[in-house]
Length: 273
Image (cartoon, rainbow, N blue to C red):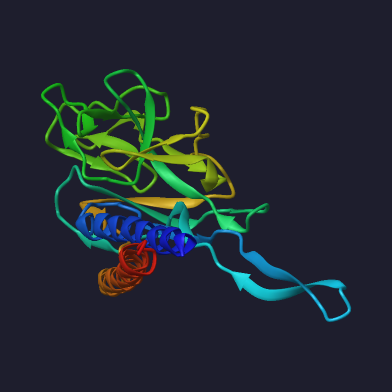
Protein backbone atom coordinates (compact mmCIF):
# COMPACT_ATOMS: atom_id res chain seq x y z
CA UNK A 1 0.00 0.00 0.00
CA UNK A 2 2.86 2.37 0.76
CA UNK A 3 4.15 1.78 -2.75
CA UNK A 4 0.82 3.05 -4.05
CA UNK A 5 1.41 6.34 -2.23
CA UNK A 6 4.69 6.85 -4.10
CA UNK A 7 3.19 5.88 -7.46
CA UNK A 8 0.26 8.30 -7.16
CA UNK A 9 2.48 11.08 -5.78
CA UNK A 10 4.97 10.75 -8.63
CA UNK A 11 2.10 11.00 -11.11
CA UNK A 12 0.90 14.20 -9.44
CA UNK A 13 4.40 15.72 -9.52
CA UNK A 14 4.82 14.82 -13.20
CA UNK A 15 1.51 16.39 -14.18
CA UNK A 16 2.26 19.48 -12.08
CA UNK A 17 5.58 19.91 -13.93
CA UNK A 18 3.80 19.40 -17.25
CA UNK A 19 1.20 22.04 -16.35
CA UNK A 20 4.01 24.50 -15.53
CA UNK A 21 5.60 23.93 -18.95
CA UNK A 22 2.31 24.37 -20.81
CA UNK A 23 1.43 27.48 -18.78
CA UNK A 24 4.81 29.00 -19.64
CA UNK A 25 4.24 28.30 -23.34
CA UNK A 26 0.82 29.96 -23.22
CA UNK A 27 2.24 32.96 -21.33
CA UNK A 28 4.85 33.44 -24.08
CA UNK A 29 2.49 32.98 -27.01
CA UNK A 30 2.95 36.68 -27.91
CA UNK A 31 6.73 36.75 -27.39
CA UNK A 32 8.45 37.21 -30.78
CA UNK A 33 10.60 34.24 -31.77
CA UNK A 34 9.69 32.19 -28.68
CA UNK A 35 10.15 28.44 -29.12
CA UNK A 36 7.66 26.26 -27.30
CA UNK A 37 8.90 23.56 -24.93
CA UNK A 38 7.74 19.95 -25.05
CA UNK A 39 7.91 17.64 -22.06
CA UNK A 40 8.66 13.93 -22.24
CA UNK A 41 7.15 11.68 -19.58
CA UNK A 42 8.89 8.44 -18.69
CA UNK A 43 7.82 5.63 -16.38
CA UNK A 44 10.04 4.39 -13.60
CA UNK A 45 11.24 0.78 -14.09
CA UNK A 46 8.51 -1.80 -13.58
CA UNK A 47 8.82 -4.39 -10.82
CA UNK A 48 8.07 -8.07 -11.40
CA UNK A 49 6.24 -9.51 -8.39
CA UNK A 50 6.35 -13.18 -7.50
CA UNK A 51 5.75 -15.40 -4.51
CA UNK A 52 7.15 -18.68 -3.22
CA UNK A 53 4.99 -21.56 -2.07
CA UNK A 54 5.47 -25.19 -1.18
CA UNK A 55 3.34 -27.85 -2.85
CA UNK A 56 1.93 -30.97 -1.23
CA UNK A 57 5.17 -32.83 -1.77
CA UNK A 58 7.16 -30.20 0.06
CA UNK A 59 8.78 -28.79 -3.03
CA UNK A 60 9.24 -25.03 -3.15
CA UNK A 61 8.17 -23.22 -6.34
CA UNK A 62 8.25 -19.56 -7.37
CA UNK A 63 5.22 -18.21 -9.17
CA UNK A 64 4.81 -14.84 -10.88
CA UNK A 65 2.06 -12.48 -9.78
CA UNK A 66 2.66 -9.85 -12.47
CA UNK A 67 4.35 -6.54 -13.08
CA UNK A 68 3.89 -3.40 -10.99
CA UNK A 69 4.41 0.11 -12.30
CA UNK A 70 6.16 2.45 -9.89
CA UNK A 71 5.11 5.83 -11.30
CA UNK A 72 6.26 8.37 -13.88
CA UNK A 73 8.37 11.52 -14.10
CA UNK A 74 9.23 14.31 -16.55
CA UNK A 75 12.47 13.13 -18.10
CA UNK A 76 13.42 16.27 -20.05
CA UNK A 77 12.14 19.43 -21.74
CA UNK A 78 12.75 19.73 -25.47
CA UNK A 79 12.30 23.08 -27.26
CA UNK A 80 10.47 22.95 -30.57
CA UNK A 81 12.61 24.93 -33.02
CA UNK A 82 10.18 25.12 -35.93
CA UNK A 83 9.73 28.44 -37.74
CA UNK A 84 6.96 30.64 -36.36
CA UNK A 85 4.55 32.64 -38.51
CA UNK A 86 5.81 35.97 -39.88
CA UNK A 87 3.77 39.12 -39.25
CA UNK A 88 4.26 42.67 -40.45
CA UNK A 89 4.90 45.46 -37.91
CA UNK A 90 6.21 48.29 -40.16
CA UNK A 91 8.82 49.13 -37.49
CA UNK A 92 12.24 49.53 -39.15
CA UNK A 93 14.07 48.06 -36.16
CA UNK A 94 12.03 44.82 -36.25
CA UNK A 95 13.66 41.92 -38.07
CA UNK A 96 12.30 38.49 -38.89
CA UNK A 97 14.79 35.69 -39.52
CA UNK A 98 13.26 33.46 -42.19
CA UNK A 99 14.88 30.05 -42.64
CA UNK A 100 14.81 28.66 -46.18
CA UNK A 101 17.40 25.91 -46.24
CA UNK A 102 19.06 24.60 -43.09
CA UNK A 103 21.05 21.33 -42.97
CA UNK A 104 19.84 18.33 -40.98
CA UNK A 105 22.17 16.94 -38.32
CA UNK A 106 22.94 13.38 -39.45
CA UNK A 107 23.28 11.90 -35.96
CA UNK A 108 19.79 12.93 -34.79
CA UNK A 109 18.07 13.56 -38.15
CA UNK A 110 16.92 16.91 -36.71
CA UNK A 111 17.28 20.16 -38.63
CA UNK A 112 19.67 22.75 -37.23
CA UNK A 113 18.52 26.23 -36.24
CA UNK A 114 19.61 29.82 -36.91
CA UNK A 115 19.96 32.60 -34.35
CA UNK A 116 20.90 36.24 -33.99
CA UNK A 117 24.06 36.75 -31.94
CA UNK A 118 23.89 39.32 -29.13
CA UNK A 119 26.42 40.43 -26.53
CA UNK A 120 25.36 40.98 -22.93
CA UNK A 121 26.64 43.89 -20.83
CA UNK A 122 28.96 41.34 -19.16
CA UNK A 123 30.57 40.57 -22.52
CA UNK A 124 28.99 37.13 -23.00
CA UNK A 125 27.69 35.94 -26.37
CA UNK A 126 24.08 34.74 -26.33
CA UNK A 127 21.67 33.71 -29.08
CA UNK A 128 18.05 34.60 -29.77
CA UNK A 129 15.27 34.39 -32.37
CA UNK A 130 13.55 37.49 -31.00
CA UNK A 131 13.98 40.19 -33.62
CA UNK A 132 12.13 42.95 -31.74
CA UNK A 133 15.19 45.23 -31.70
CA UNK A 134 15.48 48.88 -30.70
CA UNK A 135 18.09 51.62 -31.14
CA UNK A 136 19.65 52.87 -27.91
CA UNK A 137 20.73 56.53 -27.41
CA UNK A 138 24.16 55.66 -28.89
CA UNK A 139 22.62 54.28 -32.08
CA UNK A 140 23.39 50.67 -31.25
CA UNK A 141 20.90 48.01 -32.29
CA UNK A 142 19.88 46.27 -29.08
CA UNK A 143 17.54 43.66 -27.60
CA UNK A 144 16.69 44.18 -23.94
CA UNK A 145 20.02 45.87 -23.23
CA UNK A 146 22.05 43.33 -25.23
CA UNK A 147 23.79 44.59 -28.37
CA UNK A 148 23.18 42.89 -31.72
CA UNK A 149 26.45 41.79 -33.30
CA UNK A 150 27.78 42.23 -36.81
CA UNK A 151 29.83 39.61 -38.66
CA UNK A 152 32.93 41.44 -37.42
CA UNK A 153 31.94 40.74 -33.80
CA UNK A 154 31.25 44.43 -33.18
CA UNK A 155 27.87 46.01 -32.29
CA UNK A 156 25.64 47.24 -35.12
CA UNK A 157 25.66 51.05 -34.96
CA UNK A 158 23.12 53.14 -36.90
CA UNK A 159 23.43 56.91 -36.61
CA UNK A 160 20.46 57.97 -38.71
CA UNK A 161 16.69 57.38 -38.62
CA UNK A 162 16.86 56.58 -42.34
CA UNK A 163 18.30 53.11 -42.58
CA UNK A 164 17.63 49.88 -44.39
CA UNK A 165 18.57 46.29 -43.60
CA UNK A 166 18.82 44.11 -46.67
CA UNK A 167 17.78 40.46 -46.90
CA UNK A 168 21.37 39.33 -46.35
CA UNK A 169 21.77 41.57 -43.27
CA UNK A 170 23.75 44.37 -44.94
CA UNK A 171 23.03 47.72 -43.26
CA UNK A 172 22.48 50.85 -45.36
CA UNK A 173 22.20 54.34 -43.86
CA UNK A 174 20.83 57.21 -45.96
CA UNK A 175 21.07 54.94 -48.98
CA UNK A 176 24.76 54.20 -48.51
CA UNK A 177 26.32 50.89 -47.34
CA UNK A 178 27.92 51.05 -43.91
CA UNK A 179 30.03 47.91 -44.27
CA UNK A 180 28.09 46.31 -41.40
CA UNK A 181 26.25 43.02 -41.75
CA UNK A 182 24.03 41.47 -39.08
CA UNK A 183 25.51 38.17 -38.02
CA UNK A 184 23.42 34.98 -38.02
CA UNK A 185 24.75 31.95 -36.17
CA UNK A 186 24.08 28.29 -36.90
CA UNK A 187 23.51 25.52 -34.32
CA UNK A 188 23.98 22.23 -36.14
CA UNK A 189 23.10 20.08 -33.11
CA UNK A 190 20.22 21.60 -31.14
CA UNK A 191 21.00 19.37 -28.16
CA UNK A 192 23.88 21.66 -27.15
CA UNK A 193 21.54 24.63 -26.63
CA UNK A 194 20.48 25.75 -23.17
CA UNK A 195 17.53 28.09 -22.71
CA UNK A 196 18.03 31.11 -20.44
CA UNK A 197 15.79 33.97 -19.38
CA UNK A 198 14.59 36.76 -21.68
CA UNK A 199 14.34 34.34 -24.62
CA UNK A 200 18.11 33.89 -24.85
CA UNK A 201 20.11 30.72 -25.45
CA UNK A 202 23.69 29.66 -24.84
CA UNK A 203 25.67 26.54 -25.60
CA UNK A 204 26.06 23.93 -22.86
CA UNK A 205 29.86 24.19 -22.95
CA UNK A 206 29.84 27.97 -23.60
CA UNK A 207 31.40 27.43 -27.03
CA UNK A 208 30.73 29.96 -29.81
CA UNK A 209 28.33 28.97 -32.57
CA UNK A 210 29.72 29.37 -36.10
CA UNK A 211 28.39 32.06 -38.41
CA UNK A 212 25.88 31.07 -41.09
CA UNK A 213 26.97 34.00 -43.30
CA UNK A 214 28.69 32.67 -46.41
CA UNK A 215 27.75 29.03 -45.67
CA UNK A 216 26.74 27.52 -49.02
CA UNK A 217 24.53 24.92 -47.30
CA UNK A 218 22.40 27.53 -45.52
CA UNK A 219 19.86 29.85 -47.09
CA UNK A 220 17.94 32.48 -45.13
CA UNK A 221 16.70 36.05 -45.38
CA UNK A 222 16.06 38.92 -43.00
CA UNK A 223 12.78 40.83 -43.40
CA UNK A 224 12.84 44.38 -42.05
CA UNK A 225 9.56 45.57 -40.56
CA UNK A 226 8.46 42.03 -39.72
CA UNK A 227 8.61 39.76 -36.67
CA UNK A 228 8.53 36.02 -36.19
CA UNK A 229 5.68 34.93 -33.94
CA UNK A 230 6.04 32.31 -31.23
CA UNK A 231 5.48 28.77 -32.51
CA UNK A 232 3.05 27.97 -29.67
CA UNK A 233 -0.11 26.12 -30.69
CA UNK A 234 -2.57 27.84 -28.34
CA UNK A 235 -5.52 25.47 -28.91
CA UNK A 236 -3.40 22.36 -28.37
CA UNK A 237 -1.67 23.89 -25.35
CA UNK A 238 -4.98 24.61 -23.62
CA UNK A 239 -6.22 21.09 -24.39
CA UNK A 240 -3.02 19.52 -23.05
CA UNK A 241 -3.20 21.75 -19.97
CA UNK A 242 -6.75 20.57 -19.22
CA UNK A 243 -5.61 16.96 -19.67
CA UNK A 244 -2.74 17.52 -17.24
CA UNK A 245 -5.12 18.94 -14.63
CA UNK A 246 -7.49 15.99 -15.04
CA UNK A 247 -4.62 13.53 -14.68
CA UNK A 248 -3.43 15.38 -11.58
CA UNK A 249 -6.91 15.14 -10.06
CA UNK A 250 -7.14 11.42 -10.85
CA UNK A 251 -3.83 10.73 -9.08
CA UNK A 252 -4.96 12.92 -6.22
CA UNK A 253 -8.13 10.83 -5.74
CA UNK A 254 -6.04 7.64 -5.74
CA UNK A 255 -3.77 9.15 -3.10
CA UNK A 256 -6.78 10.12 -0.97
CA UNK A 257 -8.20 6.60 -1.29
CA UNK A 258 -4.92 5.12 -0.08
CA UNK A 259 -4.90 7.59 2.79
CA UNK A 260 -8.41 6.56 3.90
CA UNK A 261 -7.43 2.89 3.69
CA UNK A 262 -4.34 3.49 5.82
CA UNK A 263 -6.39 5.44 8.34
CA UNK A 264 -8.86 2.57 8.63
CA UNK A 265 -6.07 0.01 8.93
CA UNK A 266 -4.42 1.95 11.75
CA UNK A 267 -7.48 3.08 13.69
CA UNK A 268 -9.76 0.06 13.30
CA UNK A 269 -8.06 -3.08 12.03
CA UNK A 270 -4.82 -2.53 13.90
CA UNK A 271 -6.42 -1.45 17.18
CA UNK A 272 -5.36 -3.50 20.18
CA UNK A 273 -8.42 -4.75 22.07
